[in-house]
Image (cartoon, rainbow, N blue to C red; front, side, top):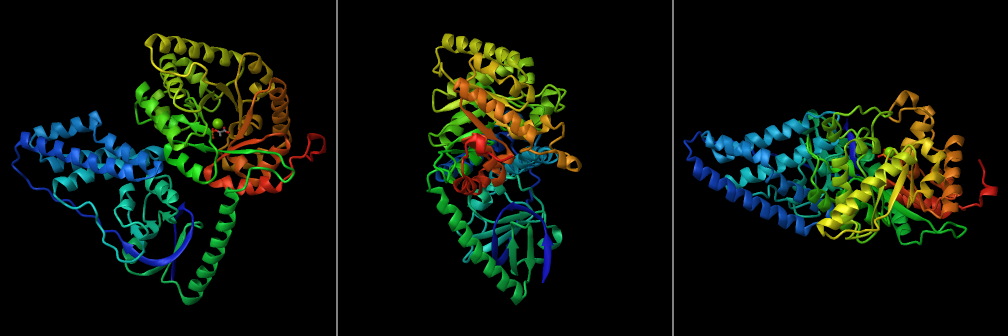
Length: 543
Ligand code: PEP
Ligand code: MG
């Protein structure tokens, strides 16, 4: 019996037999090749790969759909495909050219060490390009014919791996490398398959065909467990099943506190991929869509591409409302931050400050958003607003976009609702001015509001004890916002990691909040706390 530690990618506990995924090692012939013929074969293979990916997308839920559509889109990426063409012209065979360029592109993204988002795209590129290489080599894309459910082990997992095995045959996933933010991990979470990453090569070399207990919540696995460990695991699996059933049963209950106050539960999301998971976990909409995360390296998407992204988000939300935050470059640590080359300190030109300095880019986003708002219940908020001057400047841009869209004669929502994300104390302290200037709604962002109120970097572990999202100071600010919102009849949502914490959610409820937005995985725990809480009138509220 040996314990291997890794990092959790998708929670859960299972017991089963490991099956190690062996990948085909490519060998390519030396040629000579006829470049024209190779190019023709490549074009056909790309067409076949895209047909396969599109058909996989059609068969899957929005979470997976977006991933397969992204892969299909990558096979049309001009930069990458030009490099492949160039190599074919220089005499390299189509399969080898595709393989080389795919690996180089994937490696470039994988090396962005402080950027989990771009790293996960890396595996998608490999997945898509190796599909083309397999088609050119006439190899099947389904790699494993399993006759009983197993725990899959591999170096890293590709998103399509999970679809290459008959459904229900994967009990769990263990990878020696990889990331919990990868698309494969997102799909695993959506499919409720427990998984851990980064257990190391030692496990991989040793695991095939052996029994394992995978405790993915804890982020570890036990190879060759003894009888006592097995018994313990089986007991815990039964307990977890009972707890899950209890939490799942909450989904159907109306959102009402013990003393009868109605509340709404929304989710903080990154795109269609996790919106779907959120909706399945009982969210009734998206309270925060972090739009900066849709960006690919070195490029701001054009209006049409952004429009597709926002409408995909609306589709994933099944007609429920989606609140999109305009770009929050300067704080999200996406590749787009680097591309913007801005002074991206947390106290610098982030959020709306950056958008206002890049009017073209801001207009593109606002036009795409107002067009998408004609297709479903979408509203828009500005991050890092400091005072009403920011709001006025942003709304001038909105007005200009309205005018342009009218002139272009495209369909858009003239009455798209715009609001402020309150994450800077100065904005909370002057909230009435936003109301007076036509602000449609407030979203209190506790992650940043705590950081700026307490002057503490939210990512700095040694200063963590200063980071208190339900402190007296925070409550005072929140109460002020609530009073202003009540007088001005402006809806307020509270969002951030703290809202997913049952104790904090209850305190915010008692400050008058009725709309809560949090990470999808916290929805049911928070709901449980709110159902059991009383929304006490403010006079009776305990500090
Ligand atoms: C917040 O600031 O509260 C928030 C939810 O936004 P983010 O975590 O993206 O900064
Ligand atoms: Mg924020």
